[in-house]
Image (cartoon, helix red, strand yellow):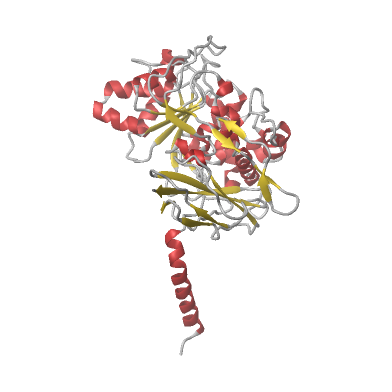
Length: 486
C-alpha cells in the first residue's frame, strides 16, 4: 500500500514530466546570468558631479557587474589632477549599506574588495600620458586583468579621458608579440562618453580592430549618451527631475544616497557607458545594434563634418574606419489608459539617436530608485524586479507566412505583485524593418504573430516587457530573435 509520502512523490514526478516540454523552450529567468560582464571604469571624478552620481549607481549593481577596477583619470575638464580619494569615499559609504543590500540580492562585494580595485592614472592630459615611460598604476592594471585566464570580454567604461587605456594599448603593442597583442586586444570592449582627450581618435586610428562605441568628438549635444539627461518635449520627464532625485535617491536612503550630488551640468552623463552591462533580459552588449538601456549603436564610418574647435579643446578629426556609433530609432511610446484597455499608443512618434536610450529611461530610473531603497529597507518593505519568462527559445526559425506564438505565461514576481505584459516588435534591431502585425491587445500575456513575406532571409526582434505594480514599478524583459526564411 502506498503511503502519503509515496503519493506525493508520484505527484511531483508527474508534474515534472508535464513541465519538461515547457522547460525545454522557456528562456532563463530575466536578471539571472551565469557570467557577469567584466568592467574597468576610467573616471575623471571631481571634474563634474555626474561622475559621482554614476558611481553611486554603479555600486548598487556591483553584484550583477564584475567590477575589475576603478581608475582615477584626467580629462579635458581636469587636465592636471586625479581624485582617487573621492572614489574611496563613495566605496566606504557603500560599505555601510552593503549588509542591507545583501538582504535583497546575493553577491554584493565587501567594501574592502572594491577599495583594492581603486587605481591611479597619470595626472597629465591626453597623449602627454602615452609613450615610453608613461606607465601608470591604472594602465598596468588594465594589462594585468586582460592577461588573466578569463575568456570573458573586458569592458572599459570611459567616463573622462581615455589616455590610461591608450597607454595600456601602447605598451601591449610594443612589448608583446603581434599574435599576443591581437589576442589581448580582441578581448577589449570600449565605450567612451564622447572624446574627452586626444587619445580616443589615436586609439581608433592605430588599433583598427578595437571594439569601440563612441559618439565621436566633443559635440555632446548630438551624442546618444546625452539622452540620459535630455528633456524631451511630449513625454513625462519626471524621473530626471531634481525633485525626483531628491525624493528617490538623495534623501532618506542612507549614507550612499546622501553623497549623490545635485545636478550641475547634466544628470549622470557617464551612466550610459555601463547601463547595457546590467543583465535585465534586454541588454546584450556584444550586439550594440540590438539596443538596450545604454542605447543602440551601428557599425559604420560616420560622415565627417568640420567645425571650429570647441571649448573642450579636443580635436575633431575624420574617422579612418568603422566604429560603433549613433543609430536612429522611430518610437511611439505606450501610455496607460484610465478606462478600458490598459495601454495604448501615444499620439506622438519620435525619431533619432537619442530615442534609442531615453525610450527605456523610466525603466532604468525606477530600477535605480528601487535599489536605493534596498540600502535601508527590509526585503518585505522594498520592491524587487519581476522575472520575465518567454516560453519560446531565444532564437526561432519560421518560413514566410507561417504563424507562431509569443507566450510569457511563465513570468512571475518574487513579491507577489500583479504583472503587466507588453509584447512588441523592435524593427531597428533586426534586418526586417517593415511593420509586423501582432494579434490582439498589446498587453496580452500571449500573442499570435504571422511572419511577413520575404524574398531573402531576414531577422526580426520581438521584445517582452514585464512590469510589476510595486513601488516603484519595475520592468524586466526577454528578447526573441526570429529568423524568417523565404
